[in-house]
Image (tube, rainbow, N blue to C red; front, side):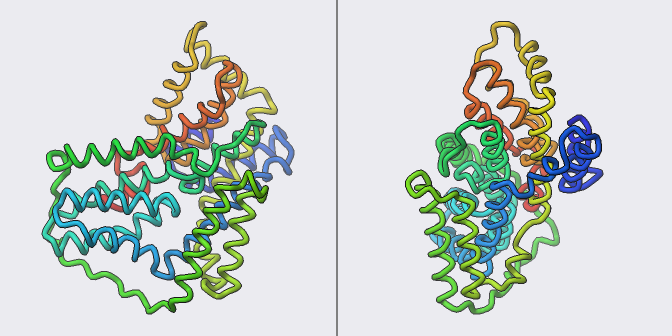
Length: 375
């Protein structure tokens, strides 16, 4: 775990490769069996995310994602209205797609609107980047960190998160963010201009058949609906996502080649490689050892509130220097273990970890939307 933390922070080695190295070391040192070391690659959370990459790829390839962005930003007249409209549109798309894909969709739209309206790009791009990150707190599938915490709860034998459970905390956080930008944004948003800030030429999207767009939207909405009522029909959400992805390829909405390209294998390897660390922490008792140390630091009479506060602020600190996915992967198993031994609710501890890790807002390197907007 120490090796993983050092490598995640320095990023001398890609995060996905670091995760695979961790899994391999656990197998070579016989801490866990080789089968257990690589069991993460067939974890339902990994399968779910791979399938949602395909569905999200279709949403992007058919131009539907761009239409959503243009539709909302079209009605904004003032800079303040545009900031709010951009954030609302961004969080809607980000709750379905990854924050990286969302930023990729909105950056050309926002730059085009900024150049046409005369508003500085920087004052529109920063709210978009923050909204893309905060949108990851809306649904189970919106962020890799959500699924990591979801899987960690399942591995520990606890009831996992529902599809919209994150929104119970994420929505108030987002509303606070919108209010903050609406009231203080005009005073605090930066103005950055350069000689290279010329009119942005948006890439022309090829004419997409209407039936492809209809099928894509139908599959996406149907998948989300079925995921929300999983407890009634009993079909696991990763199976629902896989069926949707298969249907899009079979109907040729998305080609097999594009479907495979849409899967971010770095996330898959990061998922599959780091999940066995949670298994090792549990099976070897290392998690309990760390738990006892943390509880000792909190004091003999530490309350569950103190636990949640500690987990939250540790996650907030780490996530601004390493990715929110890596932060959640490192802290989720530990927070659940600590909560178990303190008699606190492990789901609350996992939620505190995810929300804290999602507040990657302080530096331009802590999350892809920040980096994309900054560059």
